[in-house]
Length: 220
Image 1: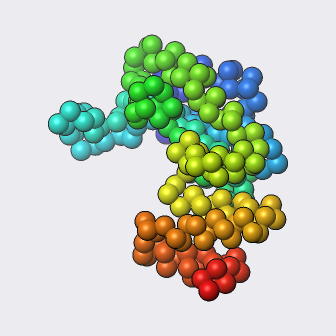
Image 2 (image 1 turned 90 degrees about the vertical axis):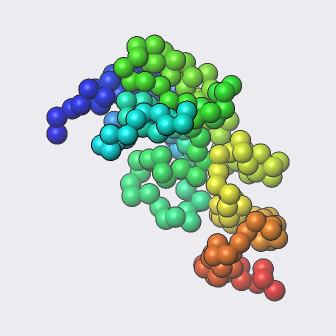
C-alpha cells in the first residue's frame, strides 16, 4: 500500500523519538514501544495518528475539533498480566488496547486536555517528544512493580492510575493472583456496595465475575 504524506510525517516523528525511548529500555514495533520492567509488567508508548475522515465535514464545528486527520497524539499504558478480565493478549507484544492503566499525554500536561499536534508543523516533533520525556516517561516510571499499583489504588489514586471505573475488579484479580485473598474479597465487597455499580454491569459482576473466581459467597 502506498504511503501517504501523513503516514510519512508520522514515521519521521517516531524515528526522532526512537533513540530516546530505546535508551530508556523500550523496544519498537512500528509506532508502538514496549518496555518490560518486571516479570510480565509492560510499559507502553504509542504514537497515534488521527483517522482519515472521508465525510468532507469541516475540521472544526462549534469551536470543537471534529476531524482529527493530520494530527497525532501519544498514548501511554501499563499492562498487568494478572488483570485479565478481557482475556490475554494475542502475543507477547503489547498494544495500547491491552493495557489496564492508560493515559493520553495531554492528561498529564499542565493543560490536562486531550492534546493533539499537527503532523505538518515542524515544531510538533520537539513539543511532543519534550512532553513525552518530561511527563509521559515520568508517569510510566512510577509503575516499577505491582505493589505500586496496589498502593495507589488503596490510597484512592484511581485517576492517577488511568484505569476504568471498574478498576476494583482488576485490582481484585491482581490481589487474588498474589495470594492476598482477604484483600481481594474486601475490594469486591466495597465495589458492590457502591451506588454507581448498576445493571447490567452489576449482573455481570454478581454472576459471571464472581462465579469464575469462586467468590459467589461474597453475596451471602
